[in-house]
Image (cartoon, rainbow, N blue to C red; front, side, top):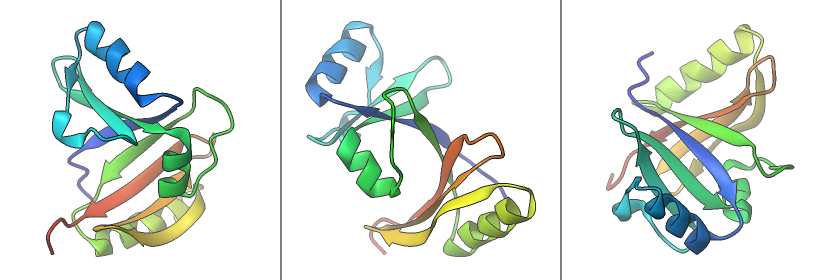
Length: 130
């Protein structure tokens, strides 16, 4: 499997406060991604993306509870629904835990898993306009 992209997702309480903070620090906003429910910035020379979602929105979108304020869930891109299914099998067979079974969300297909230490990831296939 070829993961072309990885990005971080964090829960926040106030989108405007988050926007103001990271803009003042000089990070590049991903303005096409910003809304009342989330904001997104690129960090560093590699333009690593971190999305900041309102806590209730990220919990709804990932079907995962964020119990403290500094948890992160990394997203891994997939090229097809079949590749998402391949990830599920590999995770199960290598000691990971599927915490949310696969489901369609908008124009995407995803599931959530954790590694043996409890770090959270979701694998997302996104097909806009199909």
